[in-house]
Amino acid sequence: MDFNARVEALKPWIRDVPDFPKPGILFKDITTLLKEPRAYRQTMDLLTVLCGDLAIDKVVGIESRGFIFGAALADRLNVGFVPVRKVGKLPSKTVRTSYDLEYGTDSVEMHADGIDKGETVLLVDDVIATGGTAAAVGGLVESVGATVAAYAFVVELSFLKGRERLGGRPVRSLIMY
Image 1 (cartoon, rainbow, N blue to C red):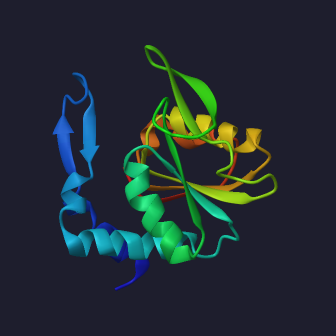
Image 2: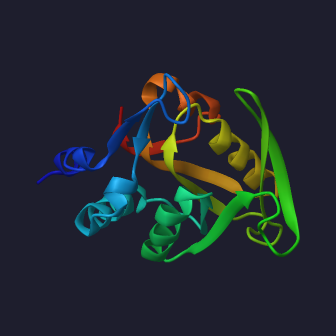
């Protein structure tokens, strides 16, 4: 089975949840993929192929589902993993960024010593929608002197044009809607 056919085989494991988190939104739920070992393993195999050619020092996972895919991918790529969390969740000195949401703002942090100046990283999350969170995390990574090699997502909601907010950096998404 070729790469694209293997990706298509994952789609049935992603559940549509209408009107979540608010009316009019069709949420792509990956928890149904996670509960099936073969589907999760296939996802990780495909992400490894998709990102295996990148010369990176670290994988940065965006809270919280980005941890599920990012940590496993870092292990497979034999590089370190750095979590980006909501404010107040990390125990040591942090660096923070804030970004705009549809209604208000949000902030995320990572350990100040998580990424060294000059390192190259891959940012990983489960879904890219409007791209605001991913763009903010990319800016946070660059603020410590690192370079974003690419962004990787299990699911991309392409109709929301989130990749346009990522500064022209490479985006690698498995499943496109």
